[in-house]
Image 1 (cartoon, rainbow, N blue to C red):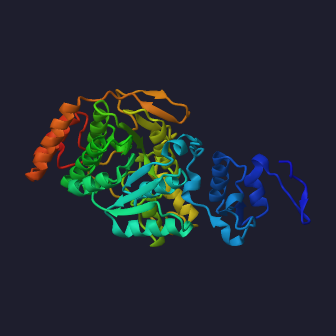
Image 2: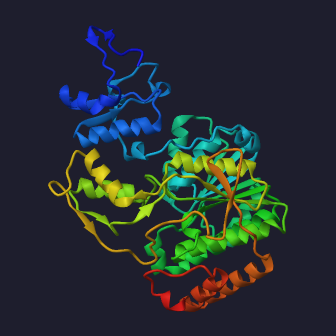
Image 3: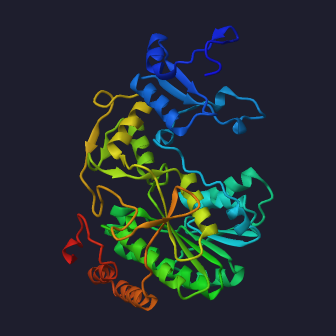
Length: 441
């Protein structure tokens, strides 16, 4: 505003105010470069939306801290990403509690090669752990992560990679016996809803029994904290993936009452750009010329960025006293069809002319709308206005443990129907949607 109607290198600076669309049209602008140093997320989104409506290419200047040698290179000016159109102010957790809590600790991250696990690992480096153990069964992903970390700095000798499946109880015990981790961030899981409907044994084996294995070892080897990464699909689950995550939530929460280890759960929605999420799928479909596949015209999802999700996990891990389920206020849910339209516009294309959208129908276990809380749950505030604690009563450990072991027995006997029947007994609100297990309801 202050620079409006002044000149820079002989060129007049225009402050369009609310008349930005008209100014862009009058000046016949083809490309707009946004320097977001003092722009709010909402204002930035409004400008990008205006560009999309007027078929103007929008690009973004990185923050000053990321300029090479203090100078801006034209190569650093990038195309706008869909993440820049999240539609709300990015949730920020600026706290020293994580650094204080994790400094000089031995920390284990499971699922470290995944989208969430890798970002947690990168953020933990700045907290000064004495040792950081990165565990995953994905060899290539773990190799790539180690290369990325070592490429930033050469003194990461405190980081160790471990290739292992969290369901391998004997090997996991060797790791706990050898390293005695103080803090565990458990992000390893199977997360794809339709795939887990087809492979219920693997969903139960990894998401429930793998979590139980790690949680039990954390108690046995006196870990101080266990932070469990859950999902909004655990709320009133309609699919096996969500139900297995809810069962794991129940186990760690009930175990918290019987141990000195602090068990903390974080629950959030879909992560923008994570492996296997809708954003990379749409990008690939747009690249190939379509069609873009959307399951239902009314389907909606909550979205957050990977850094947001991980700052919740780290903050919860540092401030939780045990037994809590932390949730984020993620604003309004986003219609997937709107997301598709915006991604097409960002690519400079037009639906109906350059590319088509195809509706494929809801997949097995899929909801139209996700929830962050059970109907009977309410929340209480924390020190951060966007972080809440769900009021969820812990179940009796003996009861939960008995049913999980019974579920395990059915798994080992290859009895999928009986296994899911027992899972529904553990989680009465679990009602299958578009699933071969619906008759059990």
